[in-house]
Length: 465
Image (cartoon, rainbow, N blue to C red; front, side, top):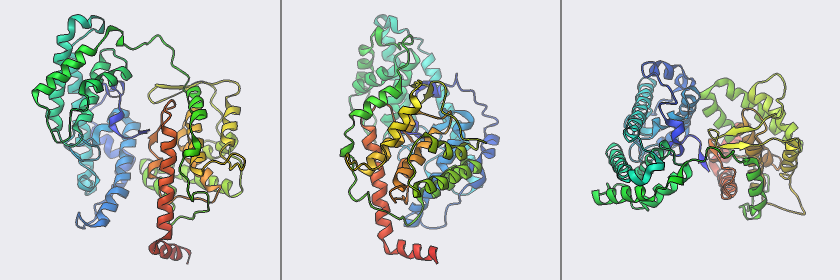
C-alpha cells in the first residue's frame, strides 16, 4: 500500500530536476491560481490543546493541504509532493523542509498560508537540485565498481552527512536518508528494487530517530554499501515490462479472502454523516469544483443503482464514469495496454479482458454457497478495477465508487473514508488486499460507533426534522 500524496514513496525519475522543469520566479503566481488557493481555511481562534483544534487540523485543514498537493502534482508533476516534508514530526516525519510544519501550525490565514506553500515548494525544489549536484559530482560506472569502490563509499558518506545536516536528525530522519541513498544508486544505473535492498542491508536498522549517527557508524554504512555493489546490479532495460494485470489475477486467486475482518459488517448501517460526500466536497472541491460536482453526481447515481440491487459490471461503471469524467457518452473500455505508477506497472489487454473484469466484479455479490466477509468483497472489487484499469482516466475514482457500491448494495454507508482515498496498491503485493479490507473494517467500526452515540442520534434527528 502506498499513500499517494506521501513523498516517502517518490522515485528518482519522478524528482530528478533534469526531467522536470520548474520556474521559481513564476511559482507564486502559479500557486495563487490553483483551485485550493481560492478556499484556504482559516485556523480557528481556540487553544491548540482544545479537541476542536485537533479535529480541525486532522479534518478540514489536512484535506485542504492534500488538495493543494494534488493541484501541484497536476500542474508540475509528482516531484512537488515533498513541499510538506517538514523536519521532525510534521506532516511527514523527518524531512528536509523548514518552511512548512503541519496543518495546525502552518495554515493560519490565506494571506500567510499561500506564501508558506510557495516558500516550501521552492525549498524542496532547491534541495532536489542540490542532491542532483551531489550525485553528478561522482560520475560513477557500475561496470567499473571494482576500481571505483572508494569513490562510491566517499559519495555515500557525504550524502549521509548532507541529509543529517539538512534534517537535523529528528523524528524519522533516517527514512529520507535511506531514500536519498537509493536515489543516488538509481541515478547511476542500479535497479531501484536492488538499490533499496542494498541500502537497507547497509544501514541495518542502526539509524534512529532523534539521534545523529557518529562518524564510525556513517563510515561503516558507506563502506558496507560500496562493498555490496556488483556490476550486474544494473537495470535490465532490455527486459519487457511484466503484465501486472496477470500478476494481480495470480495474487487474487491466492489471497485468503475469508480471513478478512467482518464481524457485524453485513448488516444495514446508516451513518451519522456522509463521509464520501464530505471528502469529495472538501478534497475534490478544493482541487476543482467541476471535478467534485461530477464525482458527487456519480455518487448519487451509484447509490441509486445500489438501492435497486443492480449487478456490478463494466456497463454499470460506465454510467458512473460519464459523470466522473464529464463526457457526453459513457466512456469505452480501453483499447490498448495501460500504465500506472510512473510507468512501473503495465496492464495488458486482450479480446477477453472486459469479460474477465465482469466475471471478477460479479463475485462482489453475496454468495450463500461461498460466503466471504463484506470487507473482502468490497476490497477485491476495488483492486479489480485498479488493475484491470478499464478507463483511460479516472480509474482510482471508479474503484472508490465500486467499493462504496458493494457496501451500499447491502445497506452500508460509511461516515468516513479517509483510509480509502489517496492510496494506491501494488499488483503483485499479496499483503495489500487484506490491508485494504482492514481499512474498510476500521471505517465500518467507526461508523457503527458514531451512529450509536447520543450526539450522532441527536444530529440525525435534527437533520430529519
